[in-house]
Every structure is written in C-alpha cells, then in structure tokens.
Length: 587
Image 1 (cartoon, rainbow, N blue to C red):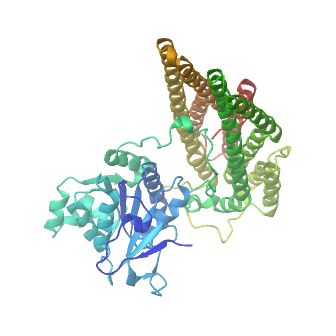
Image 2 (cartoon, rainbow, N blue to C red):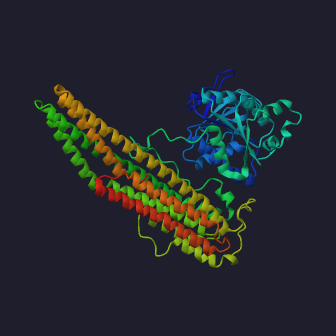
Image 3 (tube, rainbow, N blue to C red):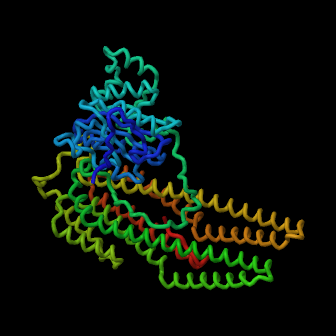
C-alpha cells in the first residue's frame, strides 16, 4: 500500500498535521547510511532499531527519517512490523529523486512509513532543512528530541551539524561504520573545526552496538526519561471498548530472524506459513469474545448499580410512580441480560480461543526450535495436522508431531548433507549449529520476551488493584459524609440519603469489579510465572548446545511452564465466575 504522500510546494511550510501526526510529542530523528546494509551489520542493528521504535512508541513519540527504502530507513520500516505498539514513522525526501508516481526510476519509498513529505529539491541533502523544521514542529514547546546516527556519509555529516546547532542530543551507534565511527574516534573533526566545536558541546552519547537493545533502552531513559504509564488508567483495563480494533498481524519473530538464525530459516518459513495464520485467527476470535464478555459484565454491574439507586430514589419520591416502574424495568433487563450471557457462554468462548491461541504459539516455537531445516514433506504434513488439532481444540496426538518428526531427524542429522539452497553462513557471533541457534532463539524470543510481558502485566494489574481499592475507599467515605449531612439537614434528609446510597452502591460495584477482574490474584500469578521464565532463561546458558536432545528436553520443560500458566489463569477466571457471577478475561 505504501505511505501517504504529502507534496510540499517550494517555500511551503510542512506541518505535523499534514502528515497525520500530533505535535508536542517526543521525537526520534533517525539518520545515517542509505547504502545496502551488510547482512551481519543488519542482524546486529535490528535489535537496536526495534528497541528504539518500541521506546519511542511507549513514550507516544514520533520517528522522523529520510523516508526512502534504503539503508537504515529500510531497516526501521521492516523492524516496525515486529514492534507492538509501533510509533508513527514519517519521512521527508526530495521530490525529484524518489519514485512517487510523478517521477519514475527514482529511489523507492519505504512502504511501512505512515507518511512521507516530498519537498522541493534535486540533490540529496536539500530535504535536511525541512527535516529539521519538522522535528521542531512535532516536538512543539517541549522540545524533547533525540537524534540517532547509524553509519552515514557526507549528507549525514550535514544533518549531524544541523542537529547539533539546534542543541539536540545525538546517539551515535558505535560499530555501525563510516561517519558514526569517525565521530566517536575523533577522525570526523579532521579539517572540520566547526564540527569539532559542535562535538565539544557534549551532546553526543555513544551507544555500543554490541550492547544490543539494553544499550538503546538505557540511552533513551537518559535523554527522554523513563516510560510513563499509558493514559488509560490501569483500573479501566477490564472495561470494554466500543468496538474491537482489527488485531495487528501476530509476528512471533523479528524480520531478521532468518538471517540471524540461518540453520532455522526453513523451519521459520514453514511455521510462518502453517502455524502463524491459524494463530492470528484464534487471537482475533479471543479479542472479540473477550470484549463481548466485558460488555456483559459491565452492563450487569451498571444494571445492579442502577437498581440500587432507583430503590433509594423510590423511597425518597414516595408520591411518584416512575421510580418504581424504572426499578422494575432495569431489574428485569439486568436479570435477563445475565441469564442470556450465561447461555451464550462468552467467557467459555474467550477462554477456549485464548487457550487454542497459546497452544498454537507453543507449537510455533516447538517446531522452529526442534526441527532442523532438513525436514521434508512428511514433517510439514504432521505439522499441518497438529496445527488443525490445536486450532479447533481437538485432543493432541499421543506425542507432539513437531517433536516426533524433529526427534526422528535428530537421530540421523549427522548423516544428512546440507542442501545446495541452504541459507548463507551465519554472521559473526551467531551460533554455528542448529541446536545452538534454536536455544538462542528460544531464550531471547520466547522466554525473555514472554517474561517481560508477564512482568509488565503484573505491574499493570497491581496498579489497577491499588486504583480500585483507593476509589472504593473514597466512595465509602463520601457515603458516610452524605449520610452525616442527612442527619444534619433534616429538610433534605431523603435527598442526602439517596446520594449516600448511590455512593455506597458504586463502592460495592467497584469492589465487585476488582474481585471479578482478579487484579491481585493475576498480578501475583504473573509475577511468579515471570520469575519461573527468568530462571529458565538463566538455565539455558548451562545447556550443552552440542546435545540436541538436551536442548529439546529443556524446551519441552519450558513450554510446560507456559502452557501450565494458561491452564492456571483459565481456572482462576472460571473460579471468579462462581465467586462474583462475572469474570474478566486475561488481557
């Protein structure tokens, strides 16, 4: 589909709203190499770029680039597919040099950008003033800006000067080549006193490429500050949305996984074709059923609150008939809603879909990490069968087909020749054998990423617990206060009593909401699971990567932990139905 194109006339002003982005947001200006990146360099830069995009998105920021499908800009666009949430990517490029429809044969635009502004210019570098002005406009008065230099050449040198002149902090990725390495080594200032003076201002922060995502995360926290909680209160996480947004495509591995793990490239491709589509369907179904169940729960709580409040109003307005009619109507509607919801089984549908999705997620990693790329059609056929079983909730085969086919291949792996069309050799620093690659992939993208998710959810749920408890306590205090006012003001006693009853009923509804949401219970459970996954990730370093059976056994044990967690939260959800009559979903 490609980005939205915004054509800026000669001398025109580029405004953030023209590109569909807000102002007053943190800005990350990414610039540097536009030459094709070497596979080894791209594989090591990809985790840094993904962390850069994620850190920007969590701070509700905007990423500004050159917009072309080249070098580091292309890597940013491809990496955005593996980042959720992904920040808006906007670019600025010379209209005469890019392939935009009016100009044929130019440099193609990066297709995953949100929008690209085409400004007047016939040479590379003519767009730099517009880029700098756009950064200022998006940042607004706050001027929270960080620039990131990856490699780079003469045009990047000019852009570096512009950012430093405007007092912007520049993160320079060490080991990314050319200009970036020259800046950090001091060679960039040879014969360039202006740049030397700008670099002496102390606005450059080196980021070690070998440090990976952690180095970028620490640098962003230094410049932009820590990530603040999202605008939506944690206590409202179980409140339904007006409609369910289309779920983004589920990407379990980053785009560069096949390059970083070449011996697993074939297995990754097969899993993406066979397992990933079924996982996306179950994810989408779970989101719909989750939101439907939340609507039923919320309407039930609102109906109960309205019934209690109307009862108090009826005792106040004894001469009016409408409170009694409204009370009967709301009570009957609430009762009917809860009865219908029990029969429809929205909770059961959600739990079933989420469980099937998690079993498919497990199958994906199980297949990728236990199957050498020498697998043939028989293993793929068995994978399709197991995928169908898990997608439709059928009993699993006596033994996991993915593991069984992989184990059979393990027995004769040493005698199998490497296919002629095998992926290129692994980059430097990448494990050479498929068991080592499988263990590294599983540790990074299954254990550590899932542990981070559980840790984030645990903190979010704990925050929700504190917010609901505080709100309930304040409402009870208000109920007591209004009750006291009723005693002190006999003339309006009935009115104060109604208000006090409403506050008390709302406090009770808040307590019920907290209990059915399971904020405290699930927070503790998620925290325990995150700890178990962190321990498993630590144990991975002691596994003998030369022993394929040991790697396979370790992965099977780790998967048992995660599938056991699915069963546990499912039980907790159903238990809360018995306790409160309503239950929220997991996420």
